[in-house]
Length: 581
Image 1 (cartoon, rainbow, N blue to C red):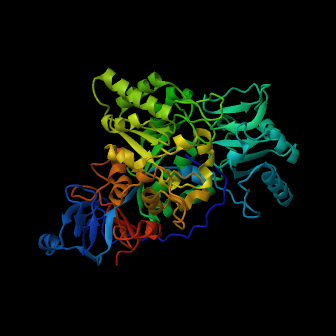
Image 2 (image 1 turned 30 degrees about the vertical axis):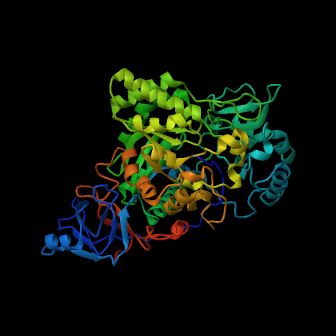
């Protein structure tokens, strides 16, 4: 999760979903045979990377090969025939780390005024005074996003917001997504004072030298105190979930992995389960249970199994747990091996140590539950890898469950080869691969030299790791960046996609080639989810999840890939978006 912000909700164009005539065998009695020919097919299957034709029967692929072979084998059988006229056909996209629930919860309509300036204190206070004048009826002011860097090292102070309003609660979300700035009235509203215990070594209330709260709150420290106050109505939550999921399908996503919903598991998954029962869940949805505090460990497995019992189906699966193991560089909560650059000696932290993590991995192994770990700092990465190595040595065998480390913003060079040797997936979010100002606080905190090795994706590919790519959006204002074709482009160029004229993000030599990027969004994502026997590539026996593009990404300039859009998205052999003829 990168940005915990309240921004404008995007205006989505309603999507018209049409069903294909290709029938699903579980619901229809027809032959369900479909022949896709005269295509340029990228299969993500190293044994047969390219083909011209593909045949599906019901929900499965039964043939991949040449036009001539397909004609010879299937021409005399009743079938639907689609001449793709040279268009590119490829496996459906797997977004292997995103937050549909949080996108739908953390999306508010502030269109009556100008967005908050990203600058320093004086600009924000002036904006806030104007906002309150124009929205005098609003009791609680919640908005964002402010840049952390101008407030470093001590952070913002509640006194500045108290001067704006001493009685109206105010909460402002920063651009890193991992801290908030609140006034005294907000702290009073939620019942927090200087005696309130911190949630974890990573999630805490900042205090001054006298032990008084400053109003800067890091990570998830407020979650136990705000209850369901952030939640929209169930009807609104349902509509925003549908909008976001339809946006993903329109842009070629056929499977997603949900990276967590804070404490709102039931609220989000109950709505998704209803959509599933009504036939309105448009893609495969891999759900998770979200841990952000050590106290959750004891009941995490039983909580996940209960979510599976209540809401699970073939389309809505519960098979993984996500641990928010450290924080982020921008607010100095990511766990580093060497101190931050401000002279404080602070190195950030993890929410619990290696042995406890190793024991939890053993518990998950018994239940066959996969593990996904948020690990930004190099110390968090090392401890997580050490935990997997330790428990495998103790058990005398490799774990069968999938273990993924996400974000990997700063990793020791000697740890990169361990991802391959320990069979740990490395997950990255390529729309962060931009050298723009929103990451300046991170560079400020770790120093220019360390920042030159920030999210060095191709180093992991060259070391043989299973690398996956994802969107990790959590607010309405970021939804556009959930487009995987933006991710494909930025994973290659390592610069902002909108005009392609910005600076290249260091290390400049860690951009992916296109085949590696596509694999990271397809077959590698299936491996992360432990579903590569049925998803992620186009080969006989696998499920017929694929997309057809309106342009060939393999022949165009990398800087143009963000403009590409599928003309059709097919899941289990059924057309769920667009048209094939």
